[in-house]
Amino acid sequence: MSGDRVTLSWARHRVWAAPLMMFVAAMTIRFVYLTQAEASPIFDQPIMDEKYHVHLAEQINSSDGLPEEPYFRAPLYPYFLAILFQITGASLYGVRLLQIFLGSLLPILVYLLGLRLFNRRIAYWVGGVCTIYPTFVYYDHALLITSLMTLLTSLLALQLLRCESKPNHTASFVLFGLLLGLAGLARPNILLLGPALLVWLWMVLRPQLGTRRAFVRYLVIAAASLIVVLPVTVRNYVVEEDFVLIAWQGGFNFFIGNNHQSNGWSATVPGIDATWEGGYRDAVAFAEKAEGRTLKRSEVSDFWYAAAWREIKNHPSTFMKLLLRKLRLFLNGYEIPNMRNVYLAGKLGPIIQPFLFAKWIYFPFGLLGPLAVIGLVLSVTHWRRFLAVYLILASYSVSLMLFFVCARFRQPLIPFLILFAVYGVFRLVEFRRRRQWKSLAGVLVLLALLLVESNHDALQLDPHRVMAEDYTEIGNAYQAQNNLAAAELEYRRALEADSTYARAYNDLGVVFTRLNRVPEAVNLFTRAITVDSGKVDSYMNLAAAYFETDDKKSAVAVLERAVVRHPSNDGVHMMLGVLYAEAGRNDDAIKVLKRCLQLNPANEQARLALGQVQKTDPAP
Image 1 (tube, rainbow, N blue to C red):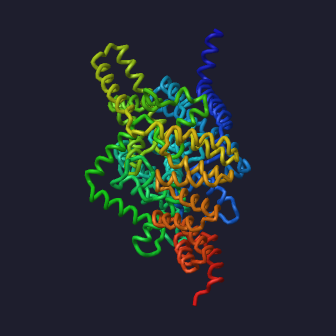
Image 2 (cartoon, helix red, strand yellow; image 1 turned 90 degrees about the horizontal axis):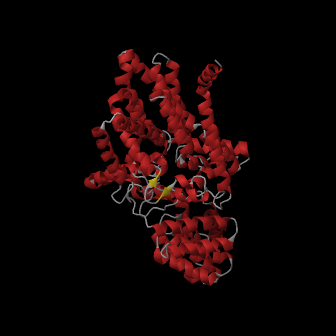
Image 3 (cartoon, rainbow, N blue to C red; image 1 turned 90 degrees about the vertical axis):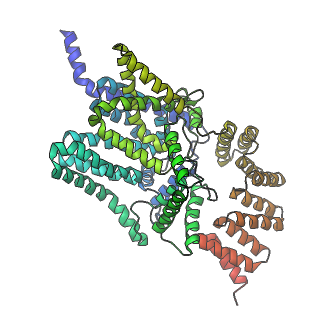
């Protein structure tokens, strides 16, 4: 009798006990990783997109606020980060701690999805996998939208299934629309789900509600989404009288992913500065130079969309090959970098290193991806049950193919892939148990082919260059902490790994400049330009080093080369203008400084320098 009571008690409480255990386990793993990562030099040194987000959050919390222009990127995460800064006193550790708390909710959401779509056994497994999945752990600590977007996408799926099960509950559709709008403020490409839902409406809602009522529900979703997005659109119009729905980066990103020189994954374009500041500046400057006038931000985006469509029209076969390459990159197991090497993060956080490696197999996605495809194929016989999730997967995947593919962009789909991967494993076990040998053999052959596809070297990255990049990033973190000896050691390791890596030469030169070893720094900056003439920092650093040794003629010559190589860089123009003024070439200084202010009207240093030159040499 007591045994029966225990069984009944467990049955009554397991509804919340399993999710609670998943949350505690997820939080524990993420906290251990946080503690381990805190000891690394890169922990408090955001780079690229992380640095951009920190900068925007600080601007939001400042008295001046953001610049009076439409949003360049979707604004949700910068505002979210600004709120976390206010809560934590701008502590990056505190921000990451709050993020891992939210990220630890993901296994619960995916567990609930497993219950709705499959059964309790599969739900336990998918929740457990999400608890330890290494890229979830990593991105929960990153100062990026990735973790929040993954949560929002899983919430969207749960709410859409709730709408499906309760079609007469209007509030469910309102909540789904609000979530969709919120996700759109995180990544606007998720809004492609809106048109895709017409399929769900016709196939699922219409038989339950009838055509008219089904379309009313769809309009409810659209209206609720618009309620969330509209304040951003209005704000964009008010600051510049320009219609930008959410952000104006879309056109430039579309060009990045679809020009005939694109590789399908790198967020760079030949001739465009690779930094986010430089990319922003060049995106505007190139468009305005081509159009011969000042452009609104929506017009800049339209310019790049038009440029991309011309590329597609002029190189249709290249475009089709590029689409196929993007699909293969999406399925490839390698965690394609867009900012920081994920595998380096694994080395700095030993708790996830056993689950994150790129050796004979790209683990874990090199196994997860093929198993997920198997699960998706085997689930088609019950397609109506899974249609909502199919549409989320398909619409989001298509949106990536239209732009470019990297690991963190596909991350919001990983929870769904885990669901179908676990389902696929269960079906394989079922085939074995029922002795359905033909079915088992066919699926295993397909799985073998998918494993080969998912684990081949699609990017053909030079491992020596990857190693050099990792050492250089660590060196930069040490340099930011004024540990110049440690920084020098890391840069030398980088150059031992790859003697053609310009960034390591440049950054080692910066260290030598700070150590007053200027002649050695000159040699290093010169070497950096020799191996890669596209790095603008090397020109500016070399010019500064020449100026330090009072060789102003050489400094000017270097910057004149830099202006030709980087005609849209306001920093190069400003530095050259100052050196012209130092050399008494006031006419040249005025010309170059005016050009600098055309490129960047907010460059106050250039404005001040121009005013000083004009005072000493007033125009006739």
